[in-house]
Image (cartoon, rainbow, N blue to C red; front, side):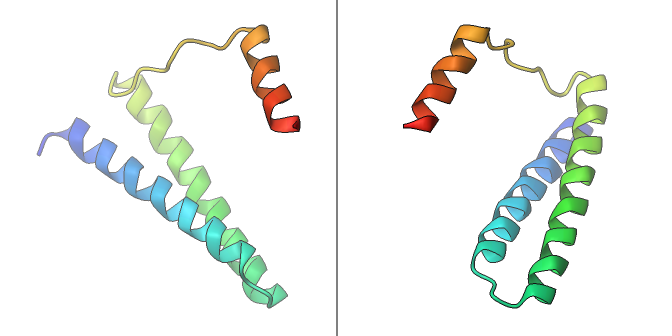
Length: 81
């Protein structure tokens, strides 16, 4: 497996973990446990972003086009409904 594949594989795994943490947080009643899981999620998000920046710098990831203000407003309006 080449480096690009490994980096993308780790990024996918971390994004899945972050999503799983979020699901657990919304279902956790115990405040102390909830705070702990939120801290773990935050650490994972920071790691994911740092790895993303490395992948982007190496050309492993190409960002999509930047959304226009009109596109952003359209999405915001849809979410506000």
